[in-house]
Image 1 (cartoon, rainbow, N blue to C red):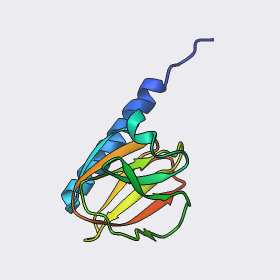
Image 2: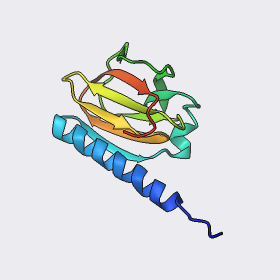
Image 3: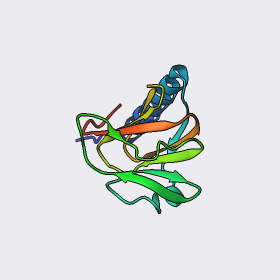
Image 4: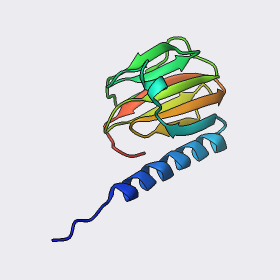
Amino acid sequence: MKSIDTTGRVGRLRAATAVLAATGALLAGGTVTARAAEQSATATCSYPYVCFIRSGSVIGRFKDVTAGWQALPSKPSAPLSVVNTRHDDVAYIRWVGGSTACLPPQSTFNVSGGQLDAVRISSAATC
């Protein structure tokens, strides 16, 4: 029986999802750059957390899957990175003006504009 390699297809799907999420955030007013999670960023944010990182320091981390938004205590302003270390769950971030972006599992977003006010972790595997 011949085996089928689907890893390339899954990788392309995740990349396309990240691009769509970043494009939606840009159109909605936030400025975000999506990229795969790097070793240096994830070294400061362990599984199963979604972390908010500024200047190499974790300024907030969340791990609970919720139906609603979890308020960010400090409402951090850009520049900062948001790291989703979860393997199967997406994370949504929300700007003060209401714009949102979706972070696929095991990804990092660099936020270069605006102020964030909330996060929501969903058990969905894709954005």
